[in-house]
Length: 121
Image (cartoon, rainbow, N blue to C red):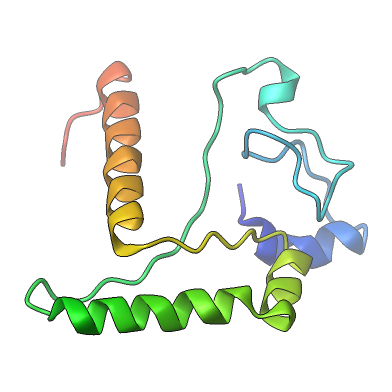
């Protein structure tokens, strides 16, 4: 497994063959590659994501300003095009939305670990 942004050059250059993408649906940057879900694993979805954190004591006004600046940058057409070309979808969020997303992701992987009987290390 490799993040699409690191493998896309090799894929498009014919030096690597992908078996599937781990997102729920095909990625527009490589629409010819089926998703794992399409191939019979209906609930399979693993995404790579990035976020920005600040120390807990950071004043909310500063967190809000950083969030606004990052979201504005992510909406810039040139930035969006650069990310999309590498198969990365930008999803600007508010601090509250990001916090909720992270909690949901943690819950998802805790469930997977529990079902697989993976003990915390």
